Length: 290
Ligand code: NAD
Image (cartoon, protein in one colour):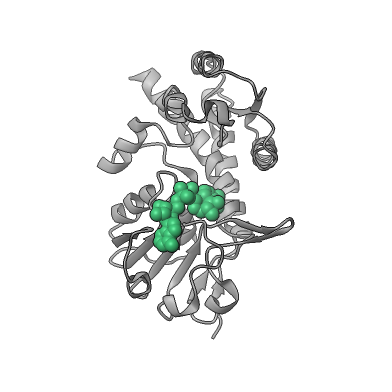
């Protein structure tokens, strides 16, 4: 038996279509064109590709996109000043700082991300949004885990009452995924690098999320037959070869549904960013009217 392939392309197209309609509605009803500013510091080639993708997707959907390219030698204070300027700009509704930052200012990443106005924090990394996610209040939520939930819904895969296992406890993927799945009434276990007998835990999962950054680590014997496997990992194993954290070729024979890499979760992330820009505009309109 071969699993259903959950195509990121197909689900991302649906998410973008829905975001596009919301963008049009914001223009027609409120005369607001959503604006996203993406700050990129330095010349990291992978970051440049991600930023180009975000810019292109904004253009497709009618969102104003401003790419703020700053030199490798940008200081922390210069970057903070740029964020302050964008926080005050009424035409910019979403701000994100592309990570990783250059080595010279990397250690200040937290302070830099925390400077973004929480209402414009479309990456959902600000402690205010993290806190709201944990307590179940409306929040801007990190795009990758939010995209995974959206995909499960679009694919008609039930979450309520299911056993979910996440491998990875990062602030970007694992932890927000925990809260999103728990809010949808899954029973969730989070595994990490200190977890003992990992395969025993993962084999209990109806929904298995792999977000560890270890190429093909999750093998077929770690998967419960019929489970839904979401592979968040993106690992470059050769100049032109990307693989996930799941050994796809064998896992596909055991899983009930599985996301490929490439062509899976990565595409959902950019689509969800567009949804977050729209959400940010709505939060800002509510704030203005309150
Ligand atoms: P991270 O390095 O911050 O976290 C990795 C996590 O995996 C840690 O919590 C660690 O404890 C856990 N881990 C590592 N080795 C393990 C092991 N042997 N057993 C169990 N747990 C283990 O990584 P991240 O930022 O969460 O990213 C994870 C992966 O997802 C990476 O491949 C990254 O490129 C990818 N990613 C993809 C997207 C996307 O858009 N699809 C977005 C973000 C991250």
